Length: 263
Image (cartoon, rainbow, N blue to C red; front, top):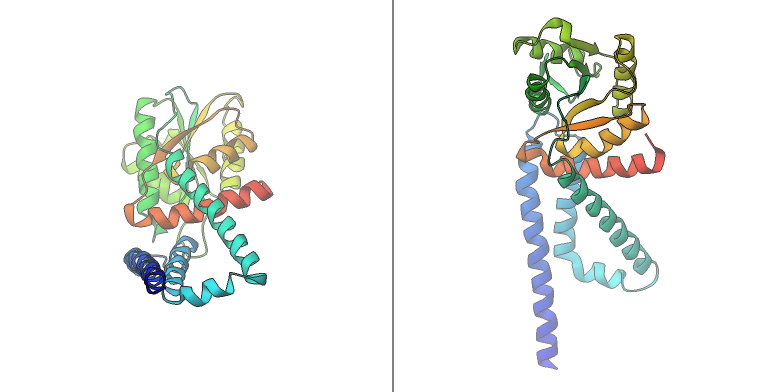
């Protein structure tokens, strides 16, 4: 009997230690996010929530396990476990999908998706998208560069304007840049960019490439095809290390929403 009780106590101690360790790792991830440009970003909030959940369960798992062992608690546990399994599976998928470019160098245009500004300059993530697009454009300088992004409520200028300015500074000719400055979502990025390209003489069957962050590539590609681009190839930009986990978690939720509502 003593050995059985000792074994149970040991397992409980291991569970407490494991979840407190996860909570500690969550704190290490959360601290730089709290002092970032947008600490209230939905992906950051997800990290904070998972960190708090790990600590709560680690310290109170006996009471929580008892509640979840019967009645409504058992059904709630099943729902939560199933939901987390789906969420983390999608998170793993978006984390690896955008690992490589599929651009072939014969695209008629490269669409660069907006990602937020610092004042009137592209932020870190947007700069990485622009750099990825620029590297590809230099291999295919006949392509048009479409910079796509409207002006958010906390932004001094439209994202497209700041992106075009950045490209000019890198030596891209003015006549190779088209500005789409109305969009507020991925769907609008592609719908409005396609309209702009057709107005500027692009055949609707010609291939295009889109530059976005690696975690966003799958949803962006699907949206591009839904918006009417027959061939849309990805140019993934790397995500800063400190932003990878919140970006993956947020994008997994975005993919789930897209699968349900197709937008």
